[in-house]
Length: 126
Image (cartoon, rainbow, N blue to C red):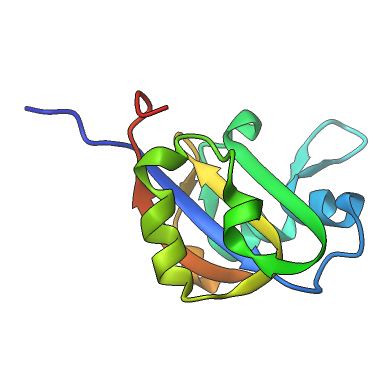
């Protein structure tokens, strides 16, 4: 049986985050004084599990722009970027978030950021 390529979920927004710190506060979990993890708003919206912080990439630009410059350089883009840009249909954004395996999202479409879709990628593609 052939291995199934992993999935990247791609999200975009415009005018939502005033700073990188605001974006990180939305994406990353917090911790109680006892060290217990507190899910972030993004986790709660998407049902994120199997959390691996190194497999979540984000970009924040000073102004809305086409997605290509924001997504150029995204991991494994050679295997999924063309399809994501086609699905975006000319969308302008100042923020993009890419969530790669092993992170899992139970309901990504519930995210308050625009959900562009889920794309299979090949980790040996670039």
